[in-house]
Length: 352
Ligand SMILES: NC(=O)c1ccc[n+]([C@@H]2O[C@H](COP(=O)([O-])OP(=O)(O)OC[C@H]3O[C@@H](n4cnc5c(N)ncnc54)[C@H](O)[C@@H]3O)[C@@H](O)[C@H]2O)c1
Ligand SMILES: [Mg+2]
Image 1 (cartoon, rainbow, N blue to C red):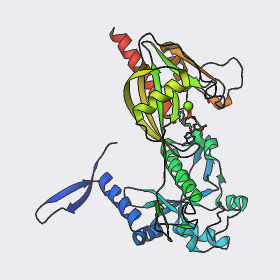
Image 2: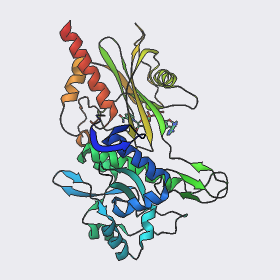
Image 3: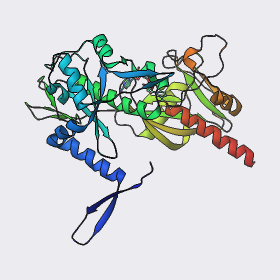
Image 4: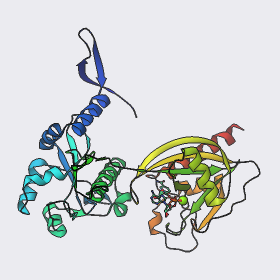
């Protein structure tokens, strides 16, 4: 992430002033909103709101793309008023970020039916007509959103889903209460604090000298292959999870693990995808596909993968049986690790 300097000076001590970056002041502001309910309530007065209905975000079609409308506080109060609700409902929203000018961004789901909340679900189609947009499932809209919008909506949906699923304390059975920002929930009967959770998942691009190993599950779109992925078991390090998953799914032992990058992934719940490159031990390349986990796995050459990366068009539309190799879309970390491997291989073959 590139940091650039803003104009805000903060007094560090009596004689020393420090220039803080826009990124740092924004981060510190968000921290304050998470910790201080009053400050967050105040931020709700001037903030903007992204609406959801039963975890589907409000979107507006614009040509082949989707735009993500934001409502001001006044617009949201007007909408709630039309459906017989007061501004108290706004406190159900969760904080998902803020602009460099410290305008806070919130997400609010007006369609979730929760037993713990006194607020009822608002009717979807009437709201859509009122708002001039549609509540569309995130998976369906993925390829028509820009990367900033999709990342913000991923966060918002994950947080809203977590709150919806943690309305009661698992120890006392009593309702839990969200703090204003939605960064935690507390059980008032025993003070247990619950924080939003993500499941760590390792995703590994296994390679030998000239090929990479890709696999597919039967639920994938036809022709689509990706890197090997799997949830970390409790007590495991990333390295152990990578080695276990590769051994479990394709019966290979890997070495030379190299961390590549990470990504929050909202499907099916909230995962932290930890992407690594790894190589097989020399001479050990024979795959045994675990049929309980995978439909197929195979080694692919640099040429096959490089051509597949250049292939345009959505794999969602592929219907034919004679399918070319298809790779995950750009918003998936798997795409970027495969691309990185192709770049590295191409550079080293040019240098040779
Ligand atoms: N963003 C990307 O590029 C990318 C690419 C591939 C996979 N993924 C994601 O990685 C995730 C894991 O991949 P996988 O399905 O091969 O995992 P996996 O190989 O661990 O197999 C899934 C099975 O693991 C078990 N499991 C263990 N812990 C779990 C948990 N916390 N939540 C759900 N199931 C759990 C379940 O029985 C489940 O059926 C998937 O959700 C997928 O969406 C993302
Ligand atoms: Mg797997």
